[in-house]
Length: 114
Length: 111
Image 1 (cartoon, rainbow over the protein chains, first blue to last red):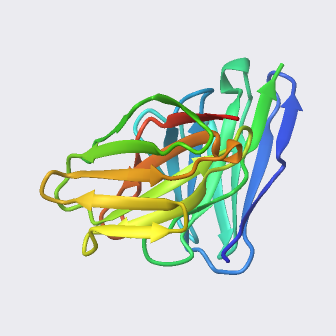
Image 2: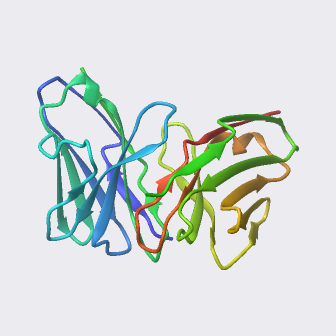
Image 3: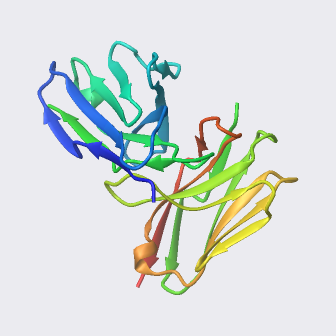
């Protein structure tokens, strides 16, 4: 089946540093990928839609300069959390569509900012 | 936009019992309704989905029913096992639009 790989699975960083999370579609091409954020015991919140070869589309309230998204190829999208602060600590999950409607998620990346 | 309500927020059952999770949606144009299972510290995994041209779909111990008139759909798990314990999310979408998720149901199956 379709697989979305996410790396790293967890990362700890110091406040003020930047962290990059990678999302790859392993056996299919994805012109669009989606980045979600999930707080403990809460639902998934769509942050942005990553578009291959063009700018990402951000949801209302999501800071574009804080969460940089790059979709460099048909199989790779990256999310960079810039100048991270403790409030950015969260579980970040990417997803992609291997076919009509179906959304496949990565395993998630746990970010802890000290 | 679409709004998806999910109930209950928590559900505790004994092993072997059935579990039912219900969702309602607001956009009558929605035509795709997946269910995801999320284990602690992992990403959501699709367990079953249903499209609007179908009223019911089964996959072993899991079934989903859809009532388009009432705009609600349900997940049914029979003969529950401890490994079914997880958070379950329902979602709805229209064609290639983004999925709108419910708030999730934490299912706990006690041995």
